[in-house]
Image (cartoon, rainbow, N blue to C red; front, side, top):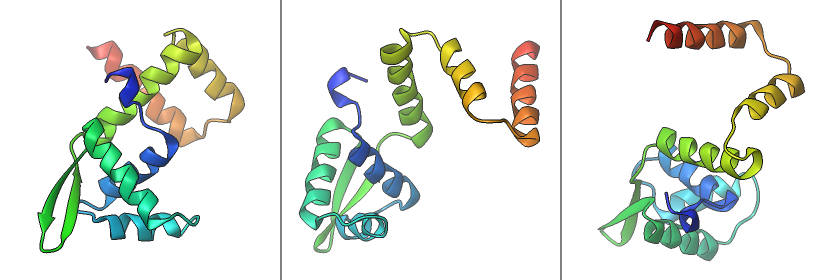
Length: 125
């Protein structure tokens, strides 16, 4: 992902709605975002156009409205965002981030089991 195509917080909020609502219109996204904080319809429309230009969304006209779909899966985009964060904040080394996360927030028994499952799967490879 080119550096200029990194998602802003507002763009990511829109992407989350589109991932959860395939075939979303600007009106759909606007309605969901307005539940948590007021945002202008035109702002949502502008941001969705930017996301289309960046290649994150594709739109198709159905009747009188544009219907948007994500062009990249959530997991792929989140992986790229995390990688960008680790590169910028931790100079590309993820270990300090892992340590920070464990130190800052206790890990539940369920999370420990899931982490152990992932570690075991890596060791089996």
